[in-house]
Each structure stands twice: as C-alpha cells, then as structure tokens.
Length: 111
Image 1 (tube, rainbow, N blue to C red):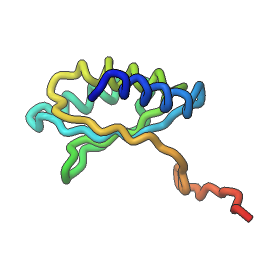
Image 2: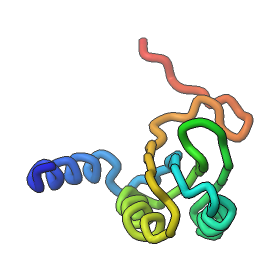
Image 3: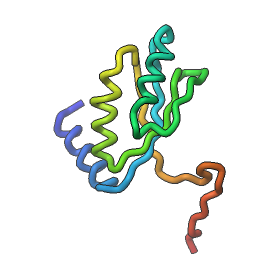
C-alpha cells in the first residue's frame, strides 16, 4: 500500500475515534501446537477482557478494551505482534453493542 494512503487512513481513523475508549474483537490464527501458551500469554494482558479457543477459520477470539485508538494500535502492532506463533490476526473495532454482558442496550430511534 502507498505510504500516503496509510498516513491518510491513520489520520481518518484516529480522528474518528479521537481520545474515546475503543473495544475490539481480535481474531487470531495461530500455530495450533502452541495454542495454550499463546492464549495464556494473551490472557495475561490487563486490557484483555475475554479469550476463547474456537473452531473455524480462527483459533483464538479475544475481546479487548483500550482507553483510545492509539493504545489499541500500540497493542496490536507491538504487544500482539511480538507473540511467537501468531500467524494472522483480524481486529474488529466494536461500533455499537445491542446486548452487552447479558443486558439489552437501548438506542434512541431516529424520528
């Protein structure tokens, strides 16, 4: 990808989220021989809320909370990328929660 495009994208995303808290679901494909060690290492980070071993295209799914977008980027690019055995990751930033921790969330309806 073009460096100018990367910078422009980064500016848009950073501007959109600003200093607001960000939650994300991170999907990981890992070396399955190392899955327990990788999952335990991920679970050791304070901002990790949940870690699940799953079936399907991903091996591990995690829910994570950050104080802002920059902290999320630091985690994904630094902490997560440094864990040996992770082959691929997908980060999905949560936009809205319609049910959270068993409770339905209400939203104002457009009129």
